[in-house]
Length: 208
Image 1 (cartoon, rainbow, N blue to C red):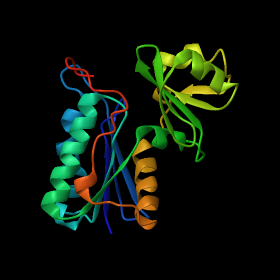
Image 2: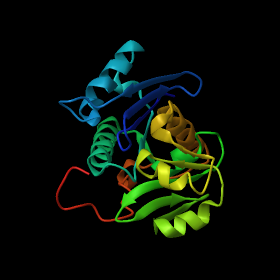
Image 3: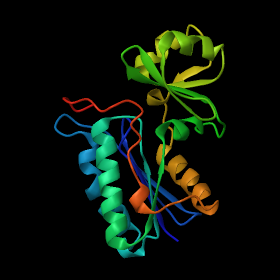
Image 4: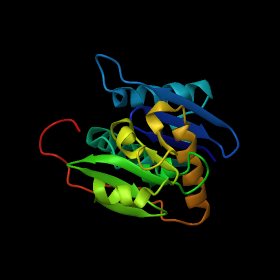
């Protein structure tokens, strides 16, 4: 079994290759010329080559389906569906909120900037996009995973609030581990069902 997991929805591109035991991770940052998701295909080719594998050796694909960068979500989903269809293999999606909730191997509270004075909330399940004032009442000094844009505001309500963007979490590996659990439990992994998770409608204009 070889599972390829990749995430272009958050602040970096995370790519992980695993056979269930070995985990090889690559992280790509954006540069001045290109958004990080522009390197997705070339890095997939690179990581397979390093392990002397070909695409046909893959048995499963897992991706982050959002919420996050709309461009990143589209890139992730399109590449995964294309590969899975051509290779005739399974593909499974994991929400970014669920991935971040596991950075300490627990179901921690997650709040990501949804703009328009709202945050995407995960509290053992996805609660949707909630007004920031309501989120403040929900925090109550709990462990909170958030992002740079909301960290200062939420630290007033929890000394245990951290921004995932300031840490070096292996989010690709976390994605792969969650996907392996879902596959093992028999969750539907037909690539035809792989779709972006848009909690709010995508913007008409702009990259994100």
